[in-house]
Image (cartoon, rainbow, N blue to C red):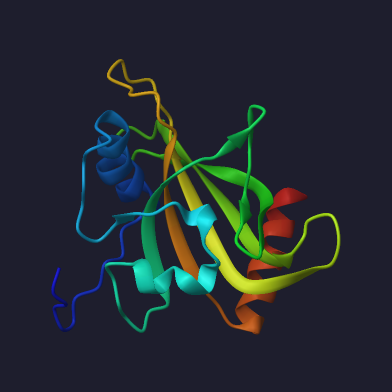
Length: 168
């Protein structure tokens, strides 16, 4: 898709889940030009902006991805490191009915092995999952990933906010 000057793609969590992720869950062949299908966990985060349909200065990129599992557990190992779940996650609710329609998890990318030396980076990902009560469910665990690179100050703020939520 060609860039349109002044256009910004800024969907809400509810829009990501109810419009894009719901359709992708129902039909794996569903495509949307601004959210590419990319196996997030095969790449280092710095490689992902180049794979995005969105090339902007906003430092935010969106992808459809599948969750890789090892022994029934989700593996978030990635090239050069791993994505660490931060906080409990949040329920995404429909703005029309206020019913839960999905989940939002926040992850931070750590360089290195999760068993040894690890360094927190400025890459933050929000992973959205559709709460599937749908009889047309394909069985594929597809997520929408919202990737963002933030400043050191922003990373400290996000970490503190997530800790505050966790201890409430």
